[in-house]
Amino acid sequence: MPIPPDPADLYPDVASHASLRAALHAVSEGCLATASMRSSESEPLTHVSVDCPLPHRNPLLISAWVHERRWSIRGTDSFQDLELVGGRAEQLKVVAAAALAWHNGEPLDALQQAAPFAHLSGRFEVPDLDPARLTASEWQHLRTEANELDYPWDPPIKP
Image (tube, rainbow, N blue to C red; front, side, top):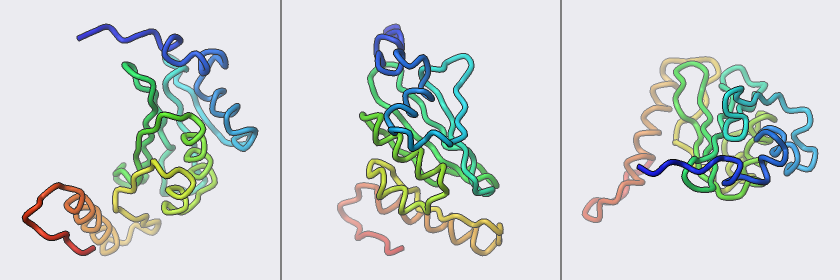
């Protein structure tokens, strides 16, 4: 396996700000100025988390890829740490849009509108942890996942 390039070489714009956190602040043109974001102490150029005011959401995790210039996001619920939203993007500005929507506690569909690269897992948020709604959310995720599989002989499963 080849040795990954130095993150400063792969992400010179991020390196010029000294951290992914600062680079996100810059590309958001001040919109993330009040966002609570934490950079990784060991890898500040490649990892940051963005807090959300909603108690049923964990911080949004943003990571830079090590072998090519691209970012990933992952947003999970705080009860089971199951993915609500994920995605991969090549432009830092759209990652900043997703971070802002997460930070503002926007509904998941609004986050996807702000950052079209974001992929909704099919799970919906269950702030009150109602067991019936948690089960329904997981079933919706499984149906979404099944619909995304390429089975040319089967019709799509209706959610």
